[in-house]
Length: 527
Image 1 (cartoon, one colour):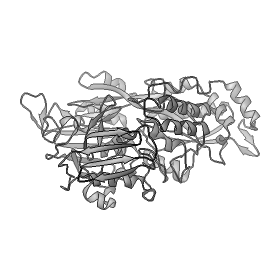
Image 2 (tube, helix red, strand yellow):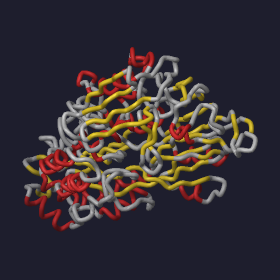
Image 3 (tube, helix red, strand yellow):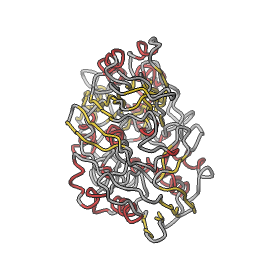
Image 4 (cartoon, one colour):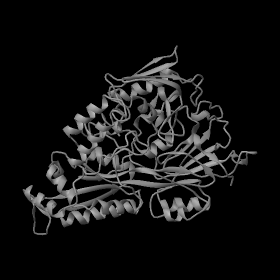
């Protein structure tokens, strides 16, 4: 995600792990000293929390960093670095726990916390989180004597408390010199990164001195793994093979291997939300989809129910929002707001827009072929490829030439923002607050901002401004209407709410959506 820089994407990339070794803990049903090993589908890249936009990066960071408040599985908030807070419409004041230390032994103070938020808010930092995870105009003020830090905005903001949940607090040497965060961590979290082998694995050690975790978790809580290994395994079949053989404790399964996992009684399964499947049209000045009539026609050419089944492998749910569960606003912003399937109307609209069939059936206008470069990630399994092929086939029937461009996760942001070499992108975005989408869906266009699709929807902007000035749930009707305005204009097309199976063996975990809560891991079997 991003705003004032050039890269911005919350791509849902999974991560979990496995264990071996350890001793049984008397009477508790858990084991001590074990290693928890989980899979991630891609390398996390740079480890600076202020630049982390990929979910795989944030998954890795979650083991080494704390935030002011922590997410609970039900979507609520738990105390973390902050033990209590006082919320006003335009500010929230947190009282920090005492005696919190960074992994390098330095204290974590209100000034430490304030420096993190002010770094992100500073335009000079070019943080992709500015205007996405937190409002661009948010300021942080510390009172070290009182043990408090206050986050404030010039006007009321709906989710000022919830925004603090998603910002990892850098401390110690990393706060003084952020260049060390390229391949290291510098946080106050339950685990400390001890080894980083790019493209292969990331190893963390349990901090025995940790004493400020959510729900009273400390480094001495029975059953916590002594070591965590996040293993890069891009192929889902390989990951499931490792899980079945005991090579890992956990993985996230989204494709056809779900059937194998669901049939194995030794594996604990949890079906969770995995981000929405949707596609965006590039609306740059030189792009065919700049014309709203073309966007609507391209959408009408598709059977979105059929596409949803293909893209999710038949395991998806009906899309009702751009925000993942558990979300603060529960209404349906999708139904009745997306152009309906009507191939004849699509053809007529393209004709009216000046796109006439050429000799080979591909439409042309002013000597230019109606060609769309379709961008998608290749690490999500065969269903993503099948969805791409379906789109290409259906649009070809409408007289559109489609060039497929599959890339790995880390290349997606570069293609979206820097090179801008796409016309349509399938982009699963995973956010838990509607405010976190604003930087993607409005404002400065890439490469100057996070608005990678160059969207400019006046109705969306108007409703977002209205919603942002009111606390939730009073603001929910406006947030939902803002999303609907995007669908009605075919700025983006929601297709399916993806689901995944969090598959675990030899351990128990809790999740927020598809992300495992590190402090919830309990080892139940030594191997």
